[in-house]
Length: 312
Image 1 (cartoon, rainbow, N blue to C red):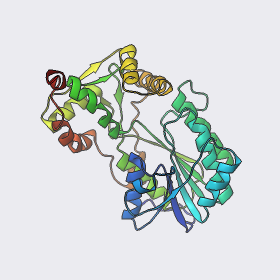
Image 2 (image 1 turned 45 degrees about the horizontal axis):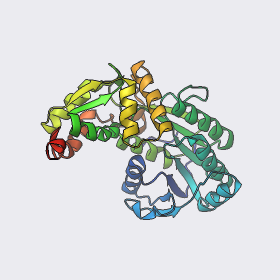
Image 3 (image 1 turned 120 degrees about the vertical axis):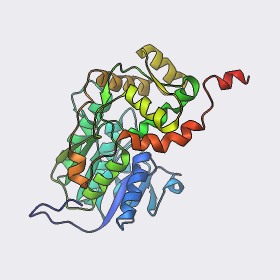
Image 4 (image 1 turned 45 degrees about the vertical axis):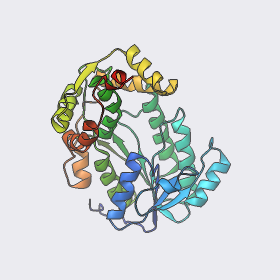
């Protein structure tokens, strides 16, 4: 654990985690439990049973925000000393986060650690980056004790490729020769736990990346080596990617947002590699190959490309 800088005193109280049933939230709850903490897990109504690990679920409905949502959430946060702020992919994620921020301020939370995104900027034309930039501004205005984590694309997002690996034996993305320093959520969770259990931040921003920028053809090769199944990378057009996502039921706004992100990858904006994870956790970040090996069994269990059509 990173030592507290001189003059900064850790405070005591409960730790709360929003987004506790997602990939990162689940990893964070387990990381905190491994450090001897039992966090509050703030989840949507009806999702309390989905919380993994030793945590105390608290169901809270943000609705469309507003004073009543702030009041309810502030009540749930009573006695909380540090909060991990993570909300789901949403067309107005900035407003959801503002509601949580207002509630944290009203409840007197000493330290908010916000999960943002590499490239966050309130003036960005990219929806996800703009939303996170606006939420960062709101956090700085309302919560002096805060820290921002800006990770690159999650390594675990590779699990989203299983569908096209099954149907076409390939990873299909409209990113050309983009190289992305993908970061493992377990490393993000470790960094977040270090901050949540330490002294309140003062607005520090940490850009989190994996150990190197990886091309998607290289990622496909790593998956091939791990699973023993040949997997290719195919650079597709935006129109093909859009059609595939819409056909899979992805909402139009989310399709547009993803294509904006893919364009930043293709422009080389996700190649950055930093040492922030090692500084926060004392360990080097996990390489993509680690997750590829954990995904191997699921890949081997997939039907061969064309098998579903042949069976009809």
